[in-house]
Length: 235
Image (cartoon, rainbow, N blue to C red; front, side):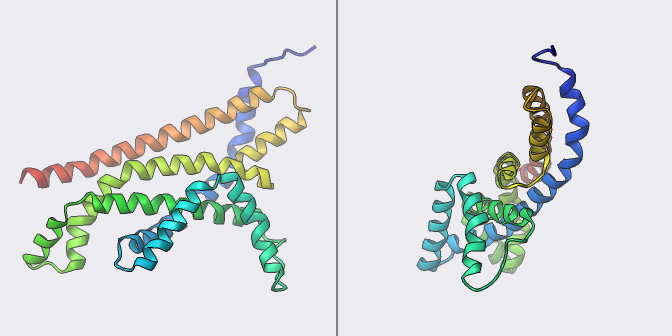
């Protein structure tokens, strides 16, 4: 009879799981890029003068925050093809990864809209006015004065958002995406659910390492950009 817990399964699982990180990275990276761009648009709507656009952007952010990731994933996966079918468009053959990217783009956009808005509002408005008064154009004032300081403020929350997206992306296996989590579940099924604990420990190790690396990279970036900020404050 085999042992209930066999640590060798942890190390034997890692080489089988790691190649599927490519799928995880592609999905997460695409969601981050598109979500950040959409977040910029939403933040501009929140910071603009139009009350209607503010309400739309705020309402969108509230809805995304109140919707669990797995529910949103199913809404996108089943809802978009159902809506398209009413217009005689068949979307059932589209790659599952596209629905995953759409889901987490929508969610990440809501997160980034708040990160960008709060970072912008954290900068004293007088700095912009002073920059314009000494001859800088509005674009130059934002690029040289406002943006570098807002970036330092936004970096920690942006890093946390990336970690959250990476972790929430593990739900993609529920609609059939074979990423690193999907492969782990295939390994468990192939073993007839034996040694599932060891395989999930291997999966956890991968996510621990990725999360720690992201956190350290953003800590280093924050320190690097903060040097310039401190130099400006002392001059």
